[in-house]
Amino acid sequence: MNENNKIQKEYYDQDLANVWSYPEHYTSYEKANWKWGDFPFSNNLNGTDFYKIKIKSKLENISILEVGSAMGAAYNFLNNSNLIDLSNYTGIEVSKSGNEFCVNNYKKANWIHADFTKFNLSKKYDYSYERISVHHMAQPLVQYDKILSNTNIAASFSFRGCINGETISNINKACFFELDGKYYCNIINVFDVINVGLKNDFNDIRILFGGLHEPFIRDEEEAKKNRGNPYVSKEIDLESKHVSRFQVRLRKNKILKKPKIYVTGHPRTFIKYPLITLELINKIKKIKT
Image (cartoon, rainbow, N blue to C red):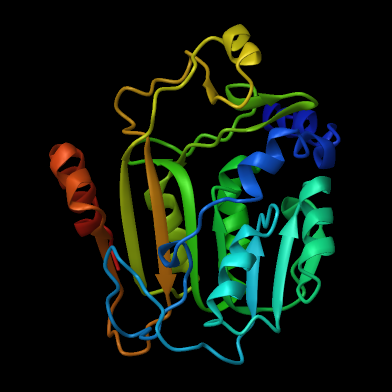
């Protein structure tokens, strides 16, 4: 067994349903705040949505996949809006407490209790999304590929990422410690995600740059005492990676003759990080499309 397989086995040997059912799960996710920009929906799929996104007319006859549905806060937001047809909505969640909450409180949707990394999608969906979920899973790029290869129209992802260097997915070097175990603290190269999108024929890709990530705990024992705070080993050089918050929104735009990739974000973020913003833009220009 190679080193990567040993590391993944350590993760999967845990009772993940309970690892993800820690007490703070309720307070963190039950009333989580969602906005239209967190979703892949649009009233004009062939147009350009900038920082502020708003749905004005109802989207009918669509199928939706949410990966990492937690306690259904996203579904509740959409349901209250009455602007999205939720008759064919599927949410997949590994947490026992999260899944039970959704099943008991949002009975019209299809809730699946499963580890997405071990789950095979049996059909395609029009719209798919996740928010800070895949960046806690093993092999995050494989999971994004699984989602996008089963999405017909548009998808959106939100994750902890980097501009430079390889994607980091090593639970022994970057993780969160919880009561019943630990889970991944992936740092996903945003350009790896873009390439997965291009591979799956998504030709209209928006990157929302959310600014640099807050500092990580670099001492393992300190991290164990501060549950819920991200730990990254001192073995990983974070100095030049520019670890940041990202959202990537991907569409299949029928009117585009060649792929379009662009950056958006709050103007204050660009003003605060002008050199990093410029580096991000320049790297996008070099992508072969």
